[in-house]
Every structure is written in C-alpha cells, then in structure tokens.
Image (cartoon, rainbow, N blue to C red; front, side, top):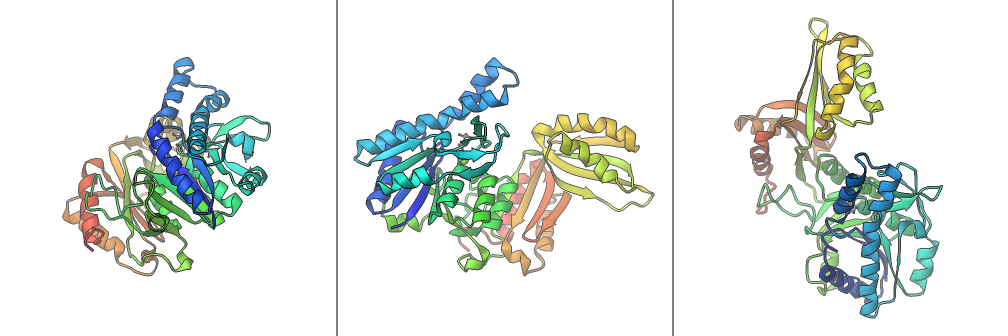
Length: 416
Ligand code: ASP
Ligand code: MG
C-alpha cells in the first residue's frame, strides 16, 4: 500500500463521461489499498473560456480578479469528480487550493508555490477518504486567490506529491507518454519508457508541452518520482499493467534510465530572433542590450555574439514571438544610445534541439547533427549547447524536414 498522487489534465476530465471514467480509475487504485490524492485541471477549454470572459470586460484584466475568475474552472471539476466517486461508493472530499492552503507568492497569474499544509489531507486520508484537490491555484499570505500559470496543475500535482512524500506522482494525460519527438511530425516516433528529469527539463524548455516546465523543476528539486501516462485507456486495466505504462521520469543516478545518446528531439515555432547589428565591442554592451529587456519582464533564450574584427559585432537572441513587438520597442532607444548600426528581427524561425544525457560522455553528436542538416540544405542560424542539449535556430519552413531527418540519423524510430 502506497500513497500516490494522480493528476488529470483538461482532456482527461473534458466531459462528464470522462470524469466518470477517472472516478473508475481512482476507485481501482483506492480499492487495491492505496491512499490516493487526485489533482485536477479545469475541463478542457474552460480556462480559455474564462480568460475570454475576462477580456470581454477589461482589455487588460486586473490580475487579482483574473485569478478569481480563472481559478473557478478547477473548482467545478473537483466537485464533479468527488460526486462521481461518492456515487460509486468511494468516500471522497474535494478542496480548492485555499482550503488546503497551498501557499504561494503574490505574483498573480504566475504565482509560485511556497508551502503546502498537509495536515488536512493526511487527516482525511487517515479516515479512508480519497482527496480531490483543485490544481493551478493557491492563496497568498494575504488570502488572495492566485493561479500558477497556464498548465499549472502539473505543478500542483508534483508539489502536493512532494509535500506528502508520495511514492509516485502520476500525470494522466491524453497521450500515453513522452515520445522521442512529436508523433504528429514523425509518425514512427517512439514512446520512451523512461527519460531523466534533466532531459525532460530540456525538452520542456525547448517547447515540449507534455509537462509544465515548473513541474519538472519541482520534481527535480524534491526528487518526486513522476510518471506520464494515458487517461484514455480502459480504466479497469490491471494496476500492474498501468503502473508500468507511460514514461517514468527518472534520476540519472538511480540506474533505471535508458542509456541513449540522444533521447529526443524537441522543437517549437514560438520564438523570434532579434539581431542588433554593428554593436561597438566594448564592455557592458550585452548588459545594455539585455537589461532593459529583463526589466520589461521579457524572457530571452538563445544568445549569440560573435568575435569582432573591426571593433563592431552583431548580437542576436531569441524571445517569445508574442514579446517581439515589445522587445523592438524597448530596444529602439538602446540602439541609438550604444551606437549600433541596425536592429532587425525574424519571426519565421524554429528552435530545435537534440536532448540526451548520453552526450555528456560521447563526442561527435553536434557534428553528426550539423552534417545531417547540411545534407538537407538547412542553414543553421544560431547554435547553443548545454551538457545534454544542442539547440539550433533554423528557418521555420525546414522544421519538419529537419526533425524527420535527425530522428532518422540518430536512430530514434520505433524499429531501433
Ligand atoms: N486549467 C489551467 C490551464 O488550462 C491549468 C492546467 O490545466 O494545468 O492552463
Ligand atoms: Mg497540461
């Protein structure tokens, strides 16, 4: 008998039938003798609907009130799921974040969890109940309702699992695990039976949407055993089968990972490239360019600066496409101040990365990657690397070609 946390995403609770299915699955684990805490998202589409309502009232919704509105989606789901469980004879209690006291900072719409009071949950578990908790929300020290950013119920699930010292946090979703790459682009992409949490972190930072990046950070920090698995299978499959399914997020030192050179390829088209041309190559210039951007709360990703030959250099970086206009507005005056020749941008780019812990101990991955791209005639605009990741920025029109060819070159396909 173990304590497990199960998190169900929006599609998994997208209709009353699906909620009843989730109840069957939860009941199965409970009846097998486990203590179960369930964390749920809002029904699919609901959070978007709530945001649209807010936008129809105020062009820039007040962040505190936006959280009041957006947090209601999850409240509906917890009540419905609790009813579905009670209806099949499983004693259950549901709670919103503020009742458990999921304490967060006060950064409305993107709050961070600081502490979770586990007493109430433990009391209920001890009395034999299943607990259903609303994901994506918490409360700040002054009792204001907060939300954790889009996709935040993954983080709620992991944080609750960490607070309770759960054996495993199972993230149920509409895909059956983490794949070598997006199966919509490469149909023979392979499901990974395990991936390290560092690889998962890199994949999330490259745009893989399977898990919210903060939830992976949390899992790494508190060493929560995480499994991504499908909620669309028959809810009555055996516990043995289910507990081996999906993808386990492991820790490199626990000896359970697959020894792959490259585990996956992640990519996204959400970014844009900004280049400041003819920048005087003097100390402090990078700071002068990036500081106002940081102050405007714009996240910068790949940064490239070349050596200068004539005292001038070009400085490029990427930002989220939605932040491009703002970035250019912030940089225009800076260009004049630092005496840069020009400011150009391109939003038709794609960021693509190979991820694999095997890279730590093996060379040649980058050259193999660049050879494959050059054979396809794909020009690389920017390169950046970490110990376990090689990222390139390319023209977005080559995205699918590049992903397919790299997937093949590194032997990631199903039949390997
Ligand atoms: N309901 C929230 C969203 O749609 C949180 C979540 O689903 O994780 O972003
Ligand atoms: Mg999600």
